[in-house]
Amino acid sequence: MRFFVGITDSDWFSYLSSFEELDEVNFWQPSGSVDFKALLPGEPFLFKLHSPNDFIVGGGFFSHHSILPFSLAWSAFGTKNGVRTQEEMRTRIEKYRRGTANSKEDYCIGCILLESPFFFDRNDWIPLPDWRKPIVRGKGFAAEEEPGKSLWNRVQSILNAKNVVSQNESAVYSAKARFGAPQTILPRLGQGSFRILVTDVYKRTCAISGSHVLHVLDAAHIKPYTKGGEARRNQRPFAQTRPSYAV
Image 1 (cartoon, one colour):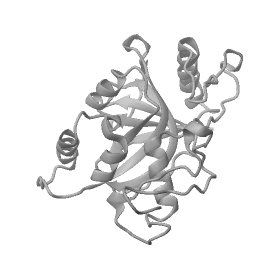
Image 2 (cartoon, helix red, strand yellow; image 1 turned 60 degrees about the vertical axis):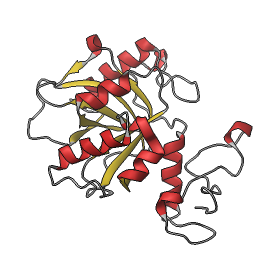
Image 3 (cartoon, rainbow, N blue to C red; image 1 turned 90 degrees about the vertical axis):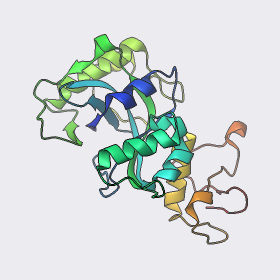
């Protein structure tokens, strides 16, 4: 198993960590030019604050990566983007892109979709004293080899102590598995992740009408989730839109 340590800003972390419970978050990147291929679905993605705050402060479980117009990222995830409003998200994107602000541009951003996020209390933050300052996006580790093994053991011990559970209410890592062989979990997809994954599977095209009008495309279960339907990666669900298209 591998895990990835991604760099985020303190505002994103502080806002999302204020929620009591989240099923998913969008770890977005202001540039939409690079695909994220470091993890398989279900592998851990950990959050590290910008230097000089070189600490692991939480994480989640990788679901999917997509390069999306910022308007679609907002409509799919809303405040789970780590901002309070769409305007705040635009302002933050423009801050990091360092270009000329354009209130009408629908920027493309990289979206790393994470399920079952968790956020550590300040006294549980894990220091990374040897973090190289030139690393600006993040770094991958093998959980079975040093230094990744020791780092993942520390993360795992905090999760066990706090009894962190996945969306299907089974323990992410049971007490018996503590410091045992790393394992990948597949928590249930959140609704935003489900919408984006299905949209990408169908090549961002309506399955019935052939429409490519991306902002109106939405996803829905063939069988409603409340009646036993499941959001699984190997499904080929019917997906419908507001009001008349389907993905």
